[in-house]
Image (cartoon, rainbow, N blue to C red):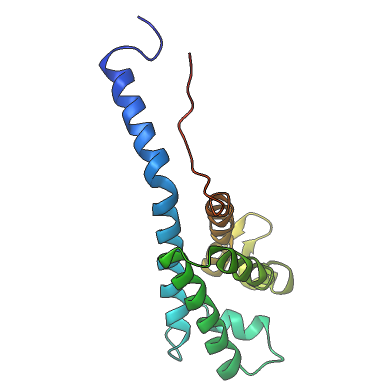
Length: 155
């Protein structure tokens, strides 16, 4: 049997094509939902599980000022991702936010690790998941000039 032939090969190609067509849009919307949700939680005092971590990471700015500011920043990123408008701005805001989001790894390792460097606390897991958001922003960013994902064509 030829590689990629038959009904399974056709099904595989159809699914791969659908993923190439729908994947970036789904990724963009998913990032938008995460940012609106997590940012929205920061707008209600005591509701965000990240509030204490943010407070500990940035002690020089009062939490009642900085946490809502960060929440508005994140909601703005989310709305831009959800609408698909201003994606360059959304990605810039996301990338500017990420050093601060990742900084507890260095500034507060005792809150990030149960066993350094591989045992993560719940806060550590919350931080490490941001690597996925960075990767998602890169993939979405690759499409802002009209590019799209396509399935590979093989002989």
